[in-house]
Length: 292
Image 1 (tube, rainbow, N blue to C red):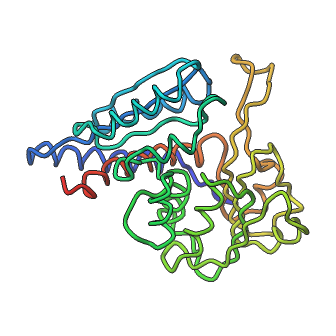
Image 2: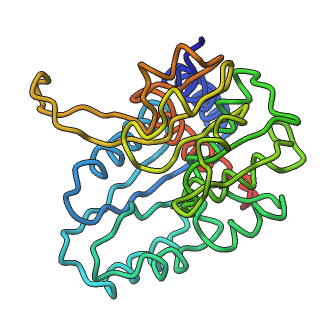
């Protein structure tokens, strides 16, 4: 069993991006500028956005953080989105999800300029992904693909089962894994809450990706020997033994499953850091798409 260390791969990518920024500076070119809009005080969202700001500092990107409290109106938020669309100094931006219930997330996502949508959630970028046209790929699935690529995990002809069909992870990842590319060329099964015989499907998986948001859902009796297991789940559970009173766990029962795997991602330290790295890659890519 080998751990796929997302933190280490993420650091590799950040170092490469830092060199690219240094080169741009030496050539007198524009430095990428990423903005993030954070609404409310959700702990996970704050941690995630802070990690993005820290990554920008390390790489040498410019960054801007815009914060609103939970009561901000949809009208004000949409006006800010339009302002960022129009701001030529901003190369890419994200509106951190989830948003408060009174704000329509789809409406906000659709309002973002596709050429600045570095989260890769705009319908235009989703369509480009399906057709394999240049654009922004959703950060978490793209991070998983980069992780697989850099660790030279074979995917061609493999059976890949993805548990979870969200628009953020499961659905786009199923498309990426099935595309005629490397990594890719898998036979993909996208499983979900209505899937029958899930255990049998998982036992046939050469690559099993858990993105269902249920701690410990994938157990050893669902995984065949030698499988590659990628755990996208991150759930906080109470843990009185920790100073902060909680810890992060994934969708996979790591202790049980790990001994059966050829490769497995830990939680934390697996997919999470790769999401940040992918966002940074998309921000640099924004310069190329706009010809800067």
